[in-house]
Image (tube, rainbow, N blue to C red; front, top):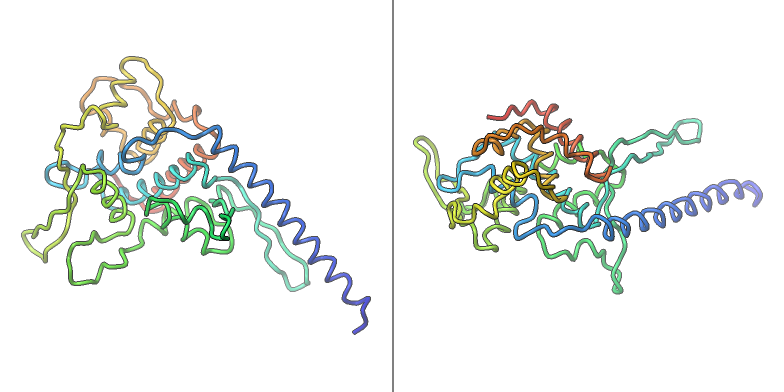
Length: 295
């Protein structure tokens, strides 16, 4: 084959690399904007930690939603935390797939989760150096998949991922990874502990119970959000995410039990940046796909 026959292929490769570099530069600007404009104080436990506290009985450790629903909400909340901190975004993306004719066919991936791939000085990905284990776990899973996937698909997949130590004989692990990692977060914060119990019929199991009961109620979103709404005070970004996720998966009643307010929590979603709104919509789509009916 002559040299001139190689040239179109080489030119196509250079164009593809240049396009990829332009896309990475564009995403770097997006992530920096997220860090600058969307950063909020996530509190002691974060959005996901607050949701786990809300949806778990503080004394019995019993879930206040069906397990599938709980796990989907928690995965969506961890993704929201990464987005609030500027490490991820949710936006439509394009995937190119080869076709027999030698060209490529583009298709749109709605609400794709994109993780910041910038590196430290030593070449390691900065996002994988984050101190929170739940953040690192989600980022690793997303980065390991070469093609972009929608937030809905990630929520469905990660909510079903079992704990790596599930089959160990220690018996001190929760069944699913997202629950296990967020339980560790609350234990490290000193507001929860593990408790081994035996159901009426069955083997020993592990659950999370609060060590402070309702002593931290003033800091709990289950009390804080209704109080702010009843006083006609605005919600900050993380509280809107909590309220929006609970409303979109049919769990908003958990925020209404102790008050008489009847606000539609969905009305506050327009306050959020578009990527977070899209993530919450995909959480609803995942919930509908799994037919996870709340209690």
